Image 1 (cartoon, rainbow, N blue to C red):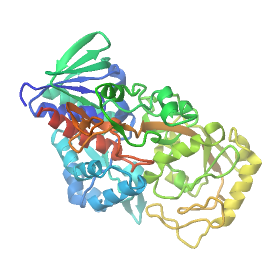
Image 2 (tube, helix red, strand yellow):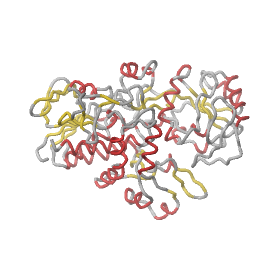
Image 3 (tube, rainbow, N blue to C red):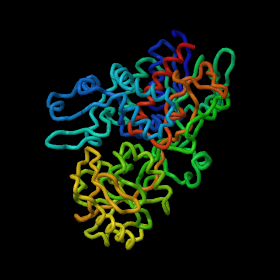
Image 4 (tube, rainbow, N blue to C red):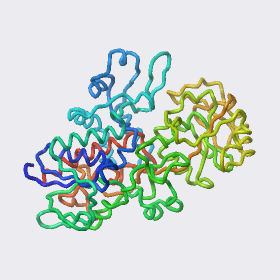
Length: 486
């Protein structure tokens, strides 16, 4: 609506999509980001830029990526990812707790939202490097994840920022919203505890509480205050707190979060110079052991897209909150690029005994015994195929491996030290399918909307890889649109 004054609080993908959407619908839009310019972009800027969307085949891929050449199309098996596939994956990994209305909004608006972003100038490309393998001379995608933003998370934020600025969105950095008052004419926002501005509607898109050690310990439980934070240090629950002060209800999995295997010696908060390079997600092709030298999870339970966001929590439960991922030369060519960064915590050796001695904090003798037991349990009748759940498993172990099991028998061996890195929290504000924030009676708080990681009820226990950026864009676009109709 022309003349409508909309405030967007946040700086990531969800906030920028909300600002763009509100502005294209005629509103005067101010975006307030707590971070300084150099650290802008929220958690989105720390991601690889992978975005999970439905698509019915190569023609819809080409719609998002018109620069694809005929040779690229000919030599790639993109497959398809239907709405039913997305619903199934979202339901399965959240143990069917996901809010059906929010799930429907995410799934059904995924491709239309990417089309909208593309129309505004956001560029996408195939996620070749992290989500495909070459099989019989063709690149084959797997796991339902095919699209990434050009330039990764940093590229996505740069593109969206340029679009928003060109449209006339006023972006204010180092502007922490500390309090929101609601009155008869709308909302009054306190900025840095000093100045205030009036707006007709507000979109909150400023993340969860993962960067607050105190809130992590309070809601996630013991030792979560010790977890490392993958992304921004600015997501300390401000938006949730301010909405609650206005009477907002909360919902979702407050003791749950997205947490991954993260480099053992990474800093306490994300480093934009490294981005998501501290993650270590090729564990399905090796084994993971704890300080006692024992395997403690099924590395091959599913494609890494559907396990990586919950395995950080499993690592945090282990002695000294650490683990080591171990590979041999049969699979090292499959390891993702993040295993080759300069900052990696890595040891290698020509024998398992020597490797065990070099894995800091690990019982070396117990490790060797674990590998021997694992090797003896590998069932080799099924061929190894990294692009499908190949059923190549172990039998008879207390923790079996369900897929991609290979004996560790081809030196030199490599091991990578990891700990828990938290990405975002699952508990948040209760919103409806219009992204309106609801109060404790289930009624809309008129003029108040939420998007991104601070929305509760979408994820429980786990999440499908790439759906976070997609949810941020879908909910952000919807919130910005609805914020102009107040």
